[in-house]
Length: 139
View 1 (cartoon, rainbow, N blue to C red):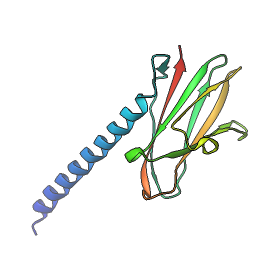
View 2 (view 1 turned 60 degrees about the vertical axis):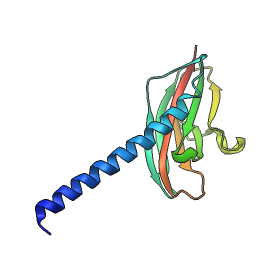
View 3 (view 1 turned 90 degrees about the vertical axis):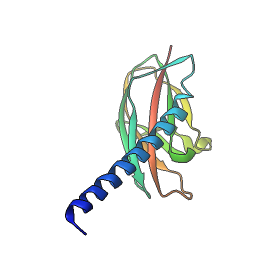
């Protein structure tokens, strides 16, 4: 096969895969945004990672004291995510596994704190997918 045809086929394949991935991501984002009710507004960030197998995504977040936050998670095809919130010293503050891997959780902090959110796919049929987080701040 001529190299120009290989390049054309490779380009078409890349475009198709890219469109499919972005379409899946749009669906996941829309599912997450449903949990931003009238009482919450987005912090303006989208926390996104592509995971495979037992990989863990880590997101660094600063929560400001006196605010209530809604942490929202989502995955491909409504794939459940397990997420854990840790402080800077890796002390566990919250783990949604204790709450049937809930898609969102409201959490309040008395003082400003730097945290890490770790996420992984809940074992099941899918061995790869997106880990998407939105963080809402209560009005």
